[in-house]
Length: 277
Ligand code: SAM
Image 1 (cartoon, rainbow, N blue to C red):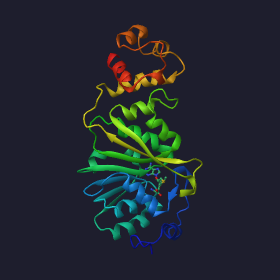
Image 2 (image 1 turned 180 degrees about the vertical axis):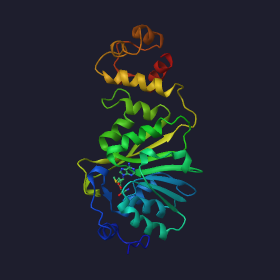
Image 3 (image 1 turned 45 degrees about the vertical axis):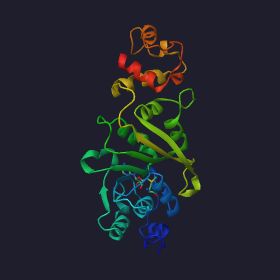
Image 4 (image 1 turned 180 degrees about the horizontal axis):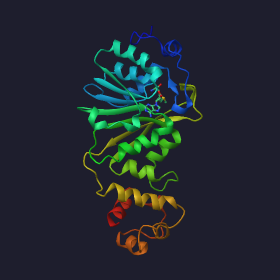
């Protein structure tokens, strides 16, 4: 028995249900409930909130979230082998855990949540950025979630929070920051996972702005960032040729030096250019 919630230690859960980790599902499990509780706390207050968790696996983070007082956890998992282990958690927290068996990339989120909702997950690394971009490009803003607290590979986390002028500043940074605040909270060493992944991971916390600071259309912003960062070593007057008939003039009209490169622009400059498309 685990002292914390009366459920068996995660190592026993994995052995009992024979949950050998599958690489193609990005399975790297967290077995230390002190760590998963720390991740849960880093999402801010959980009381009164529904938490959407992607990929609960054997349930380490799910248990952390419930122990830290989440009103309800909705956990979406693709691997059917883990469902009996999740059912045991559900029985220990009646009415507080809803398990959805399926692919997180195919869920219509606004349909399944109700009331204040946060997303907290140790994401499968192979679909982590696809999920993040899906959430960040929501038509409805402010979106259906009030924050995202997510584990990424450290290098991806650094791209999400990178500031203008930094080598890692790119499309993911602009899409993450144009109507949200993104912050890297702490690193999680490889050894904290079973099996250990190849690289260090990091927890990122993203809070959507209630009222977007910069006003532009998402599809236009995606086109501008794609063109500008697609040829990031070129000056903007060259890299934007494919999407603007006269980039030199447009850049000057927007008050942007046409000889700058993509990584030297601020997020607000990308929005100004998107508006001019
Ligand atoms: N939350 C657990 C933990 O922290 O120990 C497991 C995290 S593990 C990095 C990622 C989890 O996502 C695995 O349980 C995996 O089966 C699940 N997963 C992978 N692809 C998925 C998908 N498309 N939809 C839902 N879950 C998925």
